[in-house]
Image 1 (tube, helix red, strand yellow):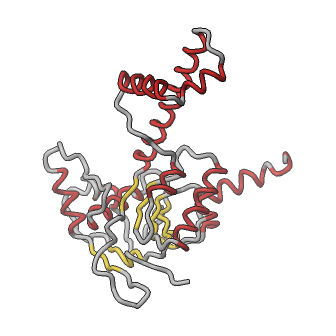
Image 2 (cartoon, rainbow, N blue to C red):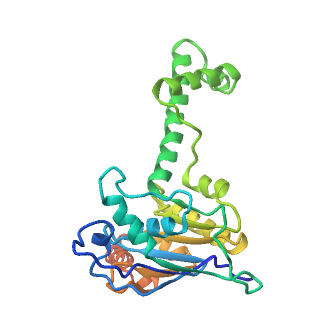
Image 3 (cartoon, rainbow, N blue to C red):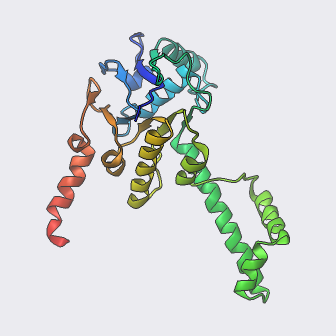
Length: 273
């Protein structure tokens, strides 16, 4: 099976400024990364503050992807620094199955942030609370529980829920992380994912990683993912850049500090299982 690579390489800016405490220079200072060379699944691993989300945003900005965000646009001068840095980065596109270089990133490509995923989940949770509140109100008024749940699905029940939603906030329909990947990620595209495992249980993280593997393999989707989840790291068929190292070293998942910590912890507790 042919591996499709839309974004082949990305080189961060070598530009220096006098005050390197300004974003994004402050996040990337004291680092000496070489060019990122991407596989169909590439992980940017690192602890908080390592710059993995910043690098995703820089890539998204440079490629003009949907979901890109600028830094502090209301603070004078801050936006210019971020744009200057992003514009000074360089990238190379990959080749198609006929070994012809792509002339652009697929239009459906986008950057999905962890905050965006959490927001979608909160909307789902909000709807669930509203449904339970509606059913509870009906039961207190004398309606049997089963009948109340049936009423929830009729036209009048949906209208009542809409009124509840409008009274609190105008929520649109949201999807959980797994549903977002199933329903919104389209074939033949590039996706940057910022900690997509946020709020997921270990079992769901494993399921998510397996879904990403399948999408990369069968739907010609390329992923660049920021994560430090040992479950994602262990399941994804990926190249891993360790952003906690000065040169952004390529490492196996079993060599990473976060994974080693979990290994040692459970090894020391093995007698309790």
